[in-house]
Length: 111
Image 1 (cartoon, rainbow, N blue to C red):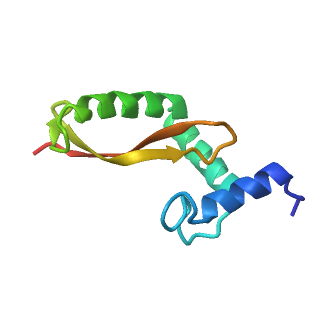
Image 2 (cartoon, rainbow, N blue to C red):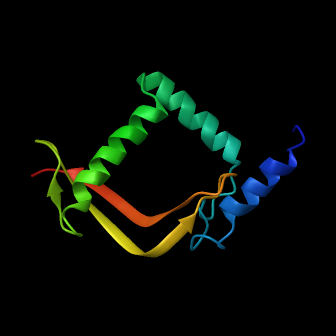
């Protein structure tokens, strides 16, 4: 196994710790962050979709769902979504000074 850089070691520690998120961003899984990223990129490539496209669509859905104030909101003919928020902000584990709303957006099929 190749030696990990100090930055990667720190990222692994943050993502596996519970300092920022209960149970850590990675939960109890000891898989390497790089392995997760590589597997995700391979899957996206196979599906011919980009992470940027997914992020943009999730932002659109979140923006629509926020108007529902914690209630389910129709997104389109096939989906509905709800956002749940908590007070405060969450520090991003990636190496930049970002702080973000404590928000979870859930999307489910429309019935």
